[in-house]
Image (cartoon, rainbow, N blue to C red):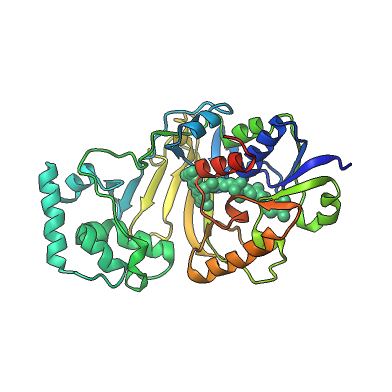
Amino acid sequence: MKEYDYLIVGAGLYGAVFAHEMTKQGIKCLVIDKRPNIAGNVYTEEIEGINVHVYGAHIFHTNNRKVWEYVNQFAEFNRFTNSPVANFHGELYSLPFNMYTFNKMWGVVTPEEAAEKIEEQRKAAGITEPKNLEEQAISLVGTDIYEKLIKGYTEKQWGRPCTELPSFIIKRLPVRLTFDNNYFNALYQGIPMGGYTKMVANMLDGIDVRLNTDYLQNKEEMDAMADKVLYTGPIDAYFGYSLGNLEYRSVRFETEVLDKPNFQGNAAVNYTDRETPWTRIIEHKWFEFGTQPKTVISREYSSEWKPGDEPYYPVNDEKNSKLYNAYKELAAKEKNAIFGGRLGEYKYYDMDAVIEAAIKKSKGF
Ligand SMILES: Cc1cc2nc3c(=O)[nH]c(=O)nc-3n(C[C@H](O)[C@H](O)[C@H](O)COP(=O)(O)OP(=O)(O)OC[C@H]3O[C@@H](n4cnc5c(N)ncnc54)[C@H](O)[C@@H]3O)c2cc1C
């Protein structure tokens, strides 16, 4: 008899939800994480009374009522709505592209005028078969929006000129002929009051958790403690990178405490010109309508990923998809281990999707 039924590697959302659901079924779980904290990439840390999103801004949004009700067991959500602002050399525009954006850009007042302006610019560009991202964007929304709101931001994100990026990256660009600044088309949206770490702590309430514990460095000892393993770390690391490294896009954050109550008046401001080196500035207090005397901001820089860096976005190109499928075949042969989550499945997963997947894996819902 081993001490635990399940060893859960990773105290992120996938691991925490799975552990919670298994425990409810009477299955004894131990959750471990190599980091000194729970919550994985949704970890929030309190600085100057402000919940700082350490691994990037996280806004909970979903159309899935069951998932929404599920997370509300663990936290009360506020009414935060994601309405980013674009800053192009000091000119501010509303995002996503909507009537406020078009009014600022062209002085147009009615939806008809805005639609005509876009159509006029699309026609003037005369692009019928877009050969790259630049041509694709212009053929969808015209030159002004492309030049001021898409070009610089996209080039910083991908580290390459838009003329060298494939057109399929932007299949469509949402254009709203309404005064709607709500970025997500989701029925439910908000931020857990008190931060994500508290929400994950509630999921893990009553469950054994060991932090600062790397599974792969102590595999034998850890495997001896439980009958089965749920692994939510990087799948290639599990197999010792034996088939090669899966690649990621990375982001670098520079976080600063400022001795003022308000820096930019909004949670997210995108810098859409090419000259400003960062892509976005996040002012964390506005996720929770903070009234603190100080503020905390994070500048985000898009960067190439190299082995050893924090993995953020999987690169879903042919080469990496093939490599992942080869690892997936190896994973299927593991008798006592199952794989899940954004790193275990090498997949971009929004939080609601990760929660749904973990519940399904535990045979819930
Ligand atoms: C920059 C960014 C912004 C995002 N913003 C949003 C958003 O606004 N809205 C949204 O819905 N989703 C967002 N997401 C997605 C969200 O982050 C994921 O859905 C979620 O974090 C996935 O949880 P997970 O448990 O699969 O992975 P993680 O949170 O990465 O958890 C995996 C855990 O496993 C641990 N681990 C790895 N290897 C080992 C090992 N060998 N031993 C022990 N522990 C190990 C890690 O330390 C980590 O804690 C964003 C993602 C990124 C990258």
